[in-house]
Image 1: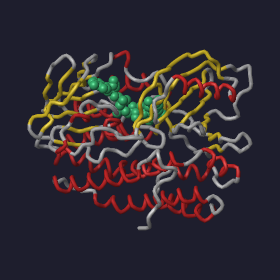
Image 2: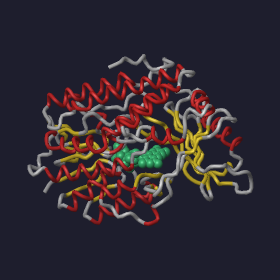
Image 3: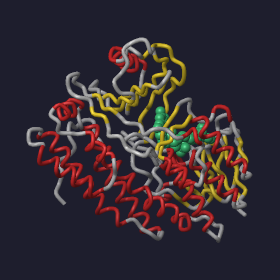
Image 4: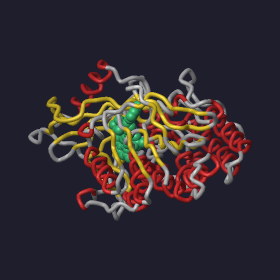
Length: 453
Ligand SMILES: Cc1cc2nc3c(=O)[nH]c(=O)nc-3n(C[C@H](O)[C@H](O)[C@H](O)COP(=O)(O)OP(=O)(O)OC[C@H]3O[C@@H](n4cnc5c(N)ncnc54)[C@H](O)[C@@H]3O)c2cc1C
């Protein structure tokens, strides 16, 4: 049986740890935080299907209604758009500290050992292989396989040698810095018409802000590609309070800033003796940064692929099965979302407000855009193109999206189902070049003119 090291207590890593220990491997998780500090002081939502995929029983209190987002446009007289009601609900809303504690308890029950308060600083690379890692205390910990679940700023991924083809950094415009806090709700004053409000602001920053009204508290998120500094926050909070008198200044929870990767997954997730999972491999839904579901699914696929490696060598070749299944089952869909996300910074809040005003974008269409079925998306985008004659700038941007999705459809079949160093290198080069060619360039007002394929 193998000695498997999990770096960081990320969700995908803990799920993989649980399954591998249950199959008899010796598994240890090394986590820099204390046990009591694990997770976030907040509630987040994700799709129940991911828990079912991972074979985790769903505690009854996790079930919640589907979040129906309302987009609040820039102009006060433009109508807000509320996403349609989807029944039955597939949404789980969980306290993040409780969720990770639940996963840790499952893993411990299967015999996984957890070492808390242990910061990993670098990978230990011997020849072609990741053989373990180094800790802040100077210890060198060696194992047969390292699973990197250290999150978006993983010190392992960021120090791997070039020949492993694994991108070290998320790159520009790929990480949202998110401030999140809960404030007491004043129930004696005017209440918002809808509970889950996303604000389209035009304050010179690019990002996402929401005001979510719960029974007792109001949940505030301010996410920016640039650092969220105190003056930016004060400004946004002031605007929120003007429009939401029920939002008091009494903070009850949260109040910290954390980073969320919003980009395509790594082109290559694995190397000899190494596999990245969850945020460390940039496995989030790039339009909003949800990553719990992908992490649970990827952790499950990873464990199954490791268990299928009867040789116990855990080379790039055998771990490629994890990479292949991840891309086939969720990764390519995640990529299409990442393509759409690349267009967002070019779209002005005023343009969206005007489209809402003219009824040219409906809530059903917004919901379809947030779905990821390629044919549906392309049909919708093409239909819209015809109707947008009076919005030539927006029309041109939408045309870019169609071309980008078309280019991605051409790229997708070049993914190698079987690993060879040459094919993997070719794939990584083409994939990274494509996403680099469509990434946001802040000095430009619009994406580069779309070329017909
Ligand atoms: C404000 C906010 C809101 C979000 N909302 C949602 C949501 O609604 N739905 C959703 O699905 N997702 C949401 N996400 C994203 C979600 O948190 C992540 O995608 C998800 O946690 C998967 O990440 P992970 O488990 O791989 O890594 P993480 O959750 O980042 O866990 C990494 C772990 O590794 C540890 N670690 C890091 N560095 C080291 C080191 N050097 N040595 C040892 N240990 C280390 C960390 O302490 C941490 O415990 C949100 C994120 C934020 C910040």
